[in-house]
Structure formats: structure tokens, C-alpha cells
Amino acid sequence: MRRLHHLPLSPFSRKVRLVLAEKRIEVELVEEKPWERRMEFLLLNPASQVPVLQIDGLTLSDSGAICEYLDETVPEPKLLPNTPAERAEARRLANWFDDKFHHEVTVNLLYERVTKKLKKSGYPESARIREGVSNIKFHLDYLDWLTDQRRWLAGDTLTIADFAAAAHLSCLDYVDDVDWGRSDNVKDWYARIKSRPAFRAILADAVPGMPPPPHYADLDF
Image 1 (cartoon, one colour):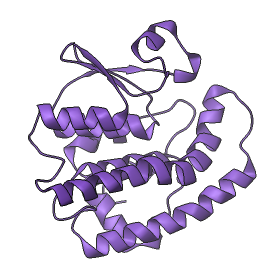
Image 2: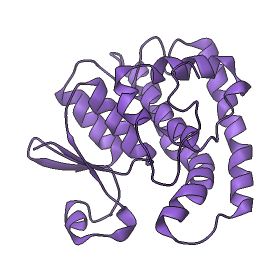
Image 3: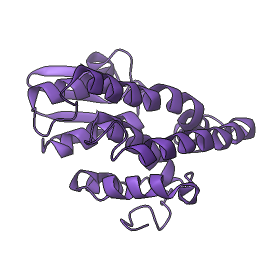
Image 4: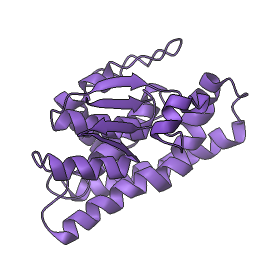
């Protein structure tokens, strides 16, 4: 049994889905609303957080741990580079998006505008949204620098860093919160990763009552 408990607009879930698809590992997707704290889900992950992957007789949680497990057990295509220095850079950038970008941008934009609505837990806080709108400009400028210097974010090859960044940006793009006109480099990089077969299921996601903008699934924007 291979089963992924996920939430469609969770960047951490999307990162794992992208890695699974890139490695051509088929899984059953089970949508989970972690705030409901279902007992069956709590037994899988007491932290009540997605994603949770059931595979090889194991129950794995934490997107970083899951992706490392998949890269070690299904080595092709490799998503962590060959040398220690290159692996360190890929992990650094993946953590940049899963930690710094997540707290400075994703939480302030996606969670305020979407997750609160799904949870029925109140109205968006305008101050936090303004903070997220301001913060994403800094991160897009950093991405612009990276994509100007390198073919992929961590170097010459596609790595987990690219999927971590694309997972967060794709969630924000679903709610039209990414200014793709800010950097041609970033737009070109995202178009390349968005065009990969692994991205097809992500682009087909639909949240009831929240349609994405027309460009969301357009490979050429």
C-alpha cells in the first residue's frame, strides 16, 4: 500500500507529490484536513500535520524526511547532488523555502486568505497580508539572483530545492499572489519546472469555491 495523506494547497504536501511524480512512484492520494484532528490521522501522525506517506510498510511524516527517504530508496532520478557541498546547497535552499519563505510569505498570504476560509476560523488580517506582499518581493529578488547565476536553483541539475520553491510558489500562484512580471529569470525557471510531467497533477488541483487564475495551468503563462 502506497498512500499519501495530503492537503491540495499545502506546499509541503505538494513538494512530496512532485518528488513522487518525478520518480514515477504511484500512490493513492487521501485528502486530509489536519485541523479536524481525526483520530485515525492522529494515530498516523500525532502532530496532525500533512503530508504523511505510507510506503514500504512504513508511515513517514515531515516533508524533508519523506523526500530524503525517497531519494535514498529510489535513486533515479537523483534529486540530491553527488558532492557534499552540492547536497548542502540543495538542502540549504529547500530549507530556505520551507522555513524562511514559509513563515514570511506563505503563512501571511496563503494561510490568511485560504486556510482561514477552509477552517472557518475568522477573517484575514490585512496587516499580515501586507507583510506577506512586501516579503515576497525580497524572495523573488533572491530567486532572480539565483536563476541568473545558475541553470537550476542549487546548481546545474534539478534538485529538491527546485521542488521546494515551486511547491510554495504554485500554492501562491493558485491564489494569484505571485508577480511573475518582477523577474524574467524567475518566470522562465518556473515555466521550465511547471512544464515537467511531474507538475501535471498539481496544475489539475481544484479547491471548491476557489478557482485559480487563468494563467495557473497555462504552461506558457
